[in-house]
Length: 299
Image (cartoon, rainbow, N blue to C red; front, side, top):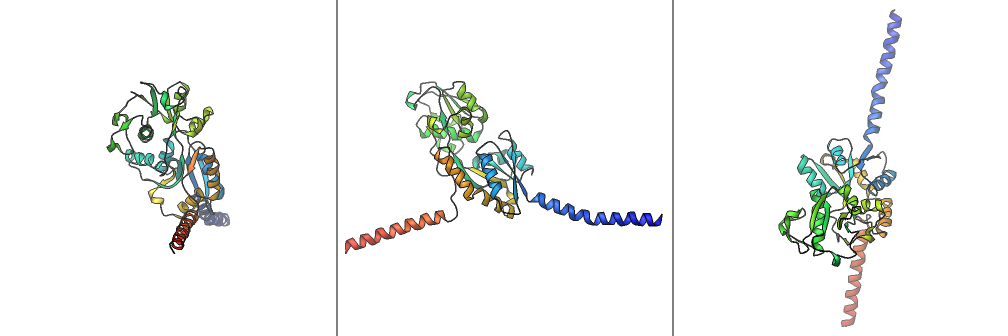
């Protein structure tokens, strides 16, 4: 009996001695798997490309969601390490509403958004009382209204900033009638014949339309609405975040974005390390050559 008990105890000690080590290895491996929530191409495509190039020991696991709420809730609840599906103003509104700590750390691309119409071929044809479908969330509503203002279809209260609403419209010469629709249902609004419909290229592509079919497009080059890599504030300075950011700004990702840029789908919101410096050096060299030429002419 004693020997049997000793044998059992020895086995228990052996198993017990190795189990924590195995658990630690598993926990470490799991910690190096960075889950990134995203929603629809080309956002999910970017995540997958980044997953192929991220530096060891890290790997990326794409977590696809079906709406524009889940990816932020998952991040806030630490179900994922990051998300890639939104611009910074959208994240800011989420933080205000949910007392969140989400931080946009890397602009990756600007989606070319605008208004589409199955009725008009130019803005000159827009009739009084035309119905306009705009997003129901405050950030994209504001973005849509600012585009209409840029094309002189409405004017807005200057104090509204980035988040104007229909209530901020001060001049509406065409008496446009605004209908708020969830972002994911705007393509259906186009198919239903609403005269002007705001949309993203990702969504409008589902009915075989491209930005070439848009009635008006946004002229946005300051990355305000760039789709960004978003994390929680507590992970700002981690090695995992640095590896993730490097993967999302890799040559492979930029090559993919350049292909879509050629199709007017988007514009990359970053350049590779050194390219910007090279451009600046070329500009400086050009200035120096110009100055030398002027001096020679003066002599």
